[in-house]
Image 1: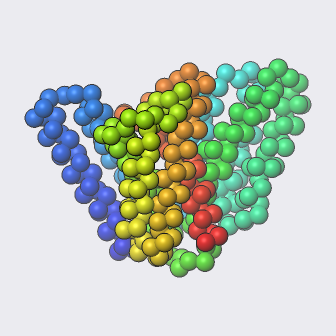
Image 2: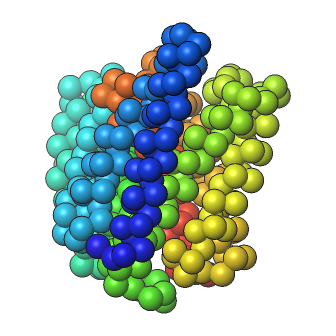
Length: 306
């Protein structure tokens, strides 16, 4: 682990320590309330998230790839378990689980062309053929569409983070690849925090109340500006100039917002509040990383084609 990466992680832990102390003090002085209780729950969950990420993503590429593969496995399982699929359609899931290690193997060995086509093309064709062979025509379109969409949003998307470790982005590599992953995760997740905070403090005009009633224009704008400022101050961490850092911050904020909205729409359709309950204050695992489903791809291709 490089010195710069160590400093960054120490800074994150220091911030969590300060936030935990401040929230605990506020609750002690003013008594328990809904907002402060939610903030404390979210902060404690962040301790677990940051610690897990520190161990799994920033020591070596092999452990990071395996950890991301596990993330995709659990995220995919979390969402498909909420679908009301017929028994014959559930058999489609078997091939999907086998596809996950294949996708991450392609990412690890930087087999770029196969990486790009395996899930979007090969698995789409195989799932369609498997669905036809099963003979279950009832809700065929719904089953194929839901399963393949879930595969793309929880496996194809997150596997781009694994590709950051191995793909040549015409940037100084070595330890910088760990910096890129940390930059992506920190800006994506803090963008969620910024939008949540600005929305709570100043939010009045709702953006799409029929899908996500808590999203406001004020929260979105505050999140965009805050994330751009954060990306600007982190520009030297990933060795990009100020202009590129601001573009990355803007794109991560916008796509993070839409990633959250996409999964909110799915949860509305399924008539559930959260996709799980494994993280207090956050819901399930996928509820916490839903924004990352889009930002991981946008971040990778923005770096690649800059």
